[in-house]
Length: 293
Image (cartoon, rainbow, N blue to C red; front, top):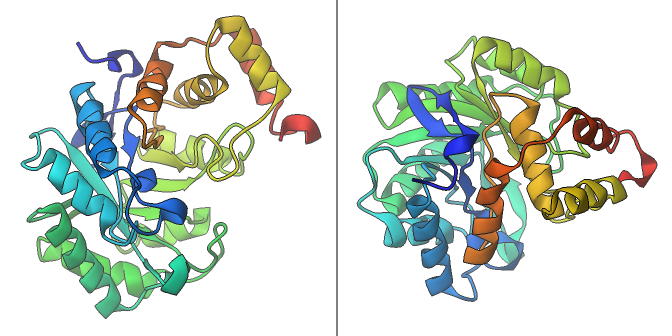
């Protein structure tokens, strides 16, 4: 029996995935650039995740670049029939690791083919188009041209499903006029909750929502309330933060990342945590509290 059965499953397009997945970003070097310091450990983490029941892995060929996809292929290819690898396009890495938009039709097509080649796939199960109007969060801007280019590759059979990342509610609505959108991947966690309304709307429609930086990202969550609940339940603060997300809405799919097998086991054990009403009330206060971060 896998460690994460209790977290349940949710639909991602026509796939059924377990709600606790794995994000591969941290398998690259510092700043998601260059190779990892320990490639063997990176391979071991991926294999341990799948062995524990994870069947949803999030990645991108601009992680490294190319590094995480090559490690995923080394560790897991040929892939299990139920493993869903989700990638994203729309950005590229500059010299020194800067994040730059890569939104033209030619750049997007190259990105799809790079992901196919480096992952060893004939078709990408899910591709998220990342809006790069702002690196630091969603910003309005038209996705019509890049999303139309991605939809064309879907018709060609290179891409099975399309999602959106780093987007506003308006961009989700506009995008659905071009193609079916099976998931939205935005920044969301206990302290950063701008998408509360969007999550509810997507939940009502049966669409998956995938929070990136579920533990705060490059600035890990720190809160006296979070630590207090963790101490009371005999868990780590990060396990409580993940458990809160699992209980927040049924359409939330988690992709916490780590380069350590020990941290992986801790993350997956968050599925065993049940928060009661008092716990939830205390945690819900973090977002509105100046002391929350």
